Image (cartoon, rainbow, N blue to C red):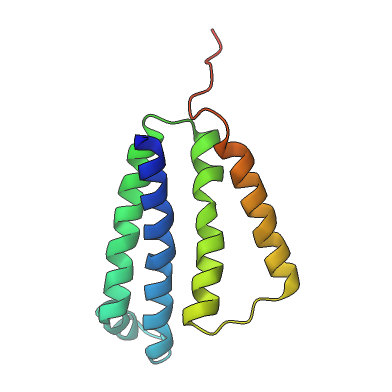
Length: 124
């Protein structure tokens, strides 16, 4: 249960962190200098995205301390699906049929990996 809760947080914090950064950067002027980067960082949407991505990284690190890498990476890859849906819904991005097909392949792979145990038997 702990692994699923952490996986859900990792997926959502990554997806929403990227969404908020994208929204903030779309609102910012072109980032072409160090000063423009600093202004962008202090945009409230970008700052929220950064906080969420820091939480994502720390939670993912914790998860990797007890679950196998070959389990964590595919399961948390479901964040790509959520990101595509958020980009479509909130940023009015066009997602081509080929991209939707790729997204469905990610879902299929995530489901297959998620059916397994997060801890593989170690070789002696």
